[in-house]
Length: 315
Image 1 (cartoon, helix red, strand yellow):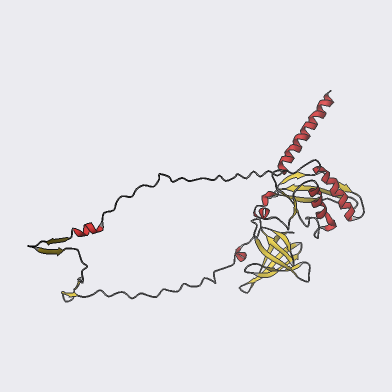
Image 2 (cartoon, helix red, strand yellow; image 1 turned 60 degrees about the vertical axis):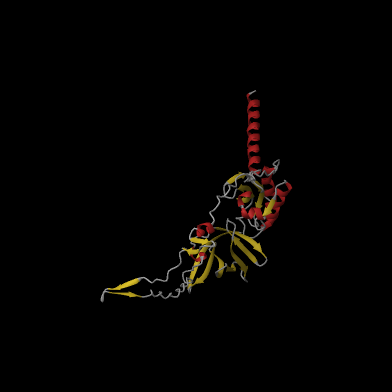
């Protein structure tokens, strides 16, 4: 009897965990698969990226490649769940685990480990990944947009217009300054409207104690001093930034474009004759990006000085 209760309790716990995982998946609109997983040396090595994308598509997930993100995901990377592949293979056994992370790199779900002992790499990784993907069987994807909708506010200005006080007639004030009598016996007219004066204020000459009338000379207008060019101080943002942060590589026709998490295109890499060397350009700088000791280095000249910066690029 106790074994039955323990079995039922285990089933309840597993169902509760599955419901919690399902609710987490429904908070995200896309599943993002990279062209190259971190443990591999080349894009879609052993066709692992293509296989993972097809498996998620067949399961009903809205799956996209990391270098072909839709507009809303480019504006808000947190709409996507990002797939990772942990490769813990040994000499004779291929071992893989599928990991789901949010836009901040936090692991939300990790599958069990898939294994294969096939000698062919492509077949071995295919079997191991399919085995690990069994953890997603029975899970569906029903994205629910929880973004609060903006309410439309209608403004009504009815009865809010107040009447303006009647302004006094300027002509009436002016008429009070004019006295006029016109009869058969008397014709009289007097205009007391103020007029501008041409009187020049006198200045005192202290040396001779004489009062002199003179016009105040106007000060010559000095020409505007031309603003000094600040081009020498207009240092590019790329020069001053010490850390570019994580840059995501998106494949283009002749290389890659690197975007940040904003997302904003920060740099374009164009292929050279060497696979680990790229011609790099930003809106203000030109240089080269190359791989050295497992790290990506950006080198360029600024004011005749060679500057090197390490880049954190996710291909």
